[in-house]
Amino acid sequence: MPATTGPDPLVGVLLDGRYRLETLIARGGMAAVYVATDTRLDRTVAVKVMRPALAEDPDFVERFAREARAAARLSSPDVVAVHDQGTDPSTRTAYLVMEHVAGRTLRDVIVDEGPQVPARALALLEPVLRALAAAHAAGLVHRDVKPENVLLGDDGRVKVADFGLARAIETSNVTATTGLLIGTVAYLAPEQVEHGRADTRTDVYAAGILLFELLTGSPPYTSESPMSVVFRHVHEDVPPPSRLVEGIPAALDELVVSATRRDPSARPVDAGAFLAELRTVRADLDPEGGDQRVVRRTHPTLVVPRGAVASSAKLAPEPDRKRRTVLWSVVVALLASAALAGGWYLGEGRYTDAPAVLGLPTAEAAEVLQAAGFTVDYLPEAFDEQVPPQHVLDQDPDPTRQVRKGGTITLQGSKGQDRRAVPVVAGTTQEDATAALEEVGLQIGTITRDYADAPSGTVVSSAPAAGEPLRPDAAVDLVVSRGQELLAVPDVTGQPRDEAGAALEAAGFGNEVTEVFSETVGAGVVVTQDPASGQAVRGAAVALAVSKGPELITVPDVDGDPRADAKRELEALGLEVREIAIPGPGRVRSTAPGAGAQVRKGSTVTVYIF
Image 1 (cartoon, rainbow, N blue to C red):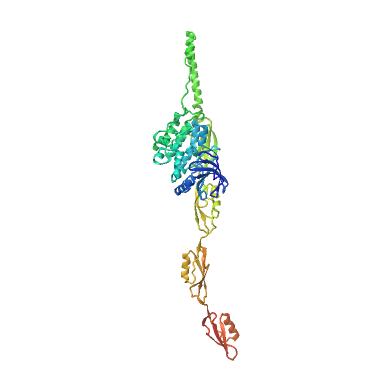
Image 2: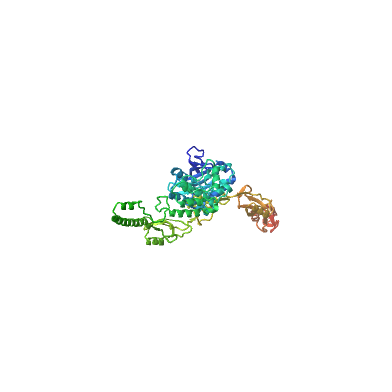
């Protein structure tokens, strides 16, 4: 997509409440790309904003999210990292957040510099194939390999962008999808045109076209009519680039032709296979890397000016001519021997095969190289899934290359498998959990929101759990609290105790029972509840007061007690006292009801005194 500096309505917008779009850097038929600031993590990112119409297509949105997640899991230094994706409701746009690569595109290089020498062309294509090989190994096909999707950083790195985006757009019902076909028609494989089919060999075809363009300065087919270009892809073989540019080695012609065969089964099976072929060709290029010729390992030929010997012979008398002829023969032989020896030394004689030490323990590899007369240098160790720690992961030159005798071979050791422990995120906010995961190189996976005994927005758990070792960029799923779930409290007053408990349990509550006396509610029936109405947290216990019936008092035996003492004892029990006095010493003769009888609290007991 060409860069643009014109005004744009989205510049300055805070996308999805997080990404502030700062500068429009490119625009195409399907999307625009902005330099943006991630306000949450305070870092510069690149944000690709799709056309608003695409966000209205649910098939596109679903596919876009799925392909973005797949691309985010690609672990390769040659792939532009995907950080986030989403759909902003306010601007009605789907967006993709990527690593910001400051620099230019391969399109800029081709336009500014024109055809590249073979060594440079292969050096530019190799990281592209490494990125595609990583994607193919992960089951992902790019579908839109072109110079605009190859980024060259100011730091010299080459990265491939937009994995899976073409597949997402292909599912869209937006008629403008035709614009994508026109925009990338120069790199379409025949099977994409004829059958709409794309696999790893489709990416190989596009990469082969890319190599052709690097070597010649333009793709093999150009026309103002896109359909004319499409027709030629389907019905013509891509020509070898040496037909356009003289001096391109035959091995490079074969590399381009092999990758761009119209029959997919005749191409390298995937980018990894194409990469292996490319490295073989690179190994055969001049070790000095200074010209376009493939080194032919043959002895040099001494060229003597035509007629030089004969001319010298004619200028001298016959005896002298014979002597001079012999002398010239000796001189020519000596010169030829010297030339052969010098040519051998300057050519093959200075070089030898680089010893193969890949996979050896690093210390052992150094001993092997030093014993062979080489100087050993080291690169920082790097993680690798297959090579054990402290073993050789890479060597430069590699075992297929020639190296000067007594030269330097650089080794890179392995740190073993790169694993990142899942941090403890339970109890933190979702934003803090996201930052903690990204800090250790992991990604947010699926976020499930559920009710929990934690404040809303708090992370309840992660899967895998804290401490589990994962590959870089692996996804960690989170469960985030929606707060405590509130339910309507049913009214169970007046219901029998068992029925009330069952009703509360069905509504999502427990219960706590307290028995109370009641003059008005029968025994075993709910008198009151707390809370009586409204809402309460799921699982909370509702307090129930269950009637024991009216409170009964046993009339004490006060016969013979002094009048005052009897009255005091009965009133203390909550009974009313009615006295009937007969002249006498003032003691209780009897009560009605009599001693041992049970009466309700507040009942009247008649005391007979004599």
